[in-house]
Image (cartoon, rainbow, N blue to C red; front, top):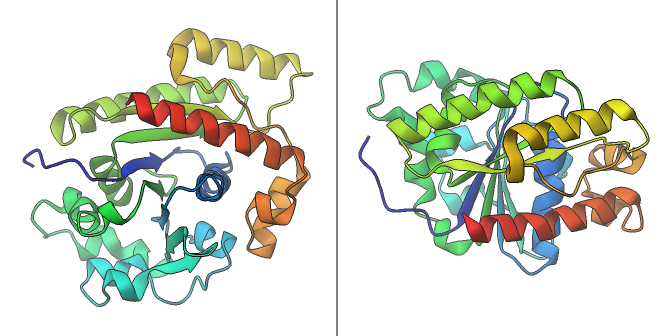
Length: 261
């Protein structure tokens, strides 16, 4: 695939091969936090499980990004506006699960998402793509479209191996399709500084990945886990919570990291 002009918005793929690490939660709350800071943000749910779609209160069985890929809907018909129009979401549904087969014969199919985003990228400051927990067609499309990658992890030793594997995938995708693609940051979720295991995993991540590890962590907080059940971000659900304070600091660091990439 030929190198194309960079998208106008800072585009970040949020990925991890392991489920349950706070990937969708991080995407929703960072997106909401950035919009609260005045940025125009687009969230893309690229996971057929449609967890992000449900987490922002949208219908996971209705219109879907698959309709855009197949030419059935335009951007204007697909985008759902949230938070006084500063935050928008592209919904997903289980219909996206067949994308691997549906687009098997499409030329340059790894660049399908990037091609569509080029039409709307200048409307946003940030685009965050919530990827499925697998390195298949959909995640590769996100990596080809992105300028950076956010890796949410848990403070467990298996995270060390998982991040190393993803870093290698990023290197290969960057070399073949997307020069300049790099890790924006590794974000540790459900962190408890009182636990020696958590501190040790954090230290090992920093030793191996240096400045790519976020200084700010997200502490274990029940409000963060509850908010998606109400279709709300943490700032709307519990603005006085530990989770809201942590994600506010994460957003500030995220902006600084993006400005350096």
